[in-house]
Length: 268
Image 1 (tube, one colour):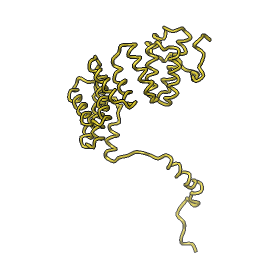
Image 2 (cartoon, one colour):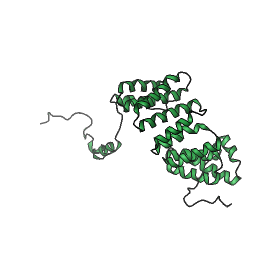
Image 3 (cartoon, one colour):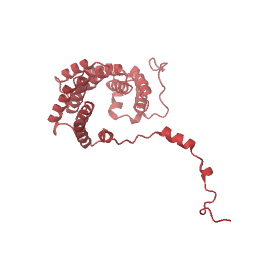
Image 4 (cartoon, helix red, strand yellow):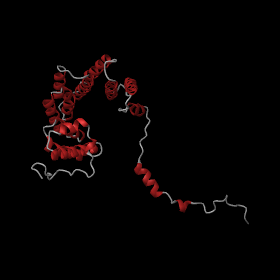
């Protein structure tokens, strides 16, 4: 095994049957910058990380770390590590990787998630500094909406709820048809949620309705939030059901021994 390609002690094995052909063509093209063996190892760990990130984020993160050990100079590898670290709530690592990505690519659209990591690390003032920096850059419209949401949240973290609401309301008033539908929906949802947290439930309902209408991709739970506000809950306790099943008599024990008709009560 070439140096650097042997498995580290804390590194998970690539699952058997992983199909690296599932990687997008542009990803496979970027991996050609590595040796053939290294590219195969990195690809396998990337596929495993992608498959696991929603079910087992810590394990996905271990796979992404393994990919970085062999492909650290590739932006796609660093992005996979940043995203899995974020999913695993390792916000310090996610912040470090997103900052590295911005340096490597010059892409300012990483600024909103950088600011969000600062918030997650309990540094809302630093998140606001990143937001101020972002105003001087050419963020795309979707990223600008995300930065607005993070900025408003940082204001709320600092106890400046009125300013947070103002930031969101201002962005919504300027959105119109100039912001992608889903970004517009996320702005409306964030505004509704902050209104709800501040006790303004009537206004919150109005904006949850707006968010639900704009959310054509059905990525948000605005409808669920409206139901909860109306006191409708579909929570189901499966543990209680299992307990009921244990205590219920068996079907054979509860069967009527005379199923063909009612009991004759007129017998002598």
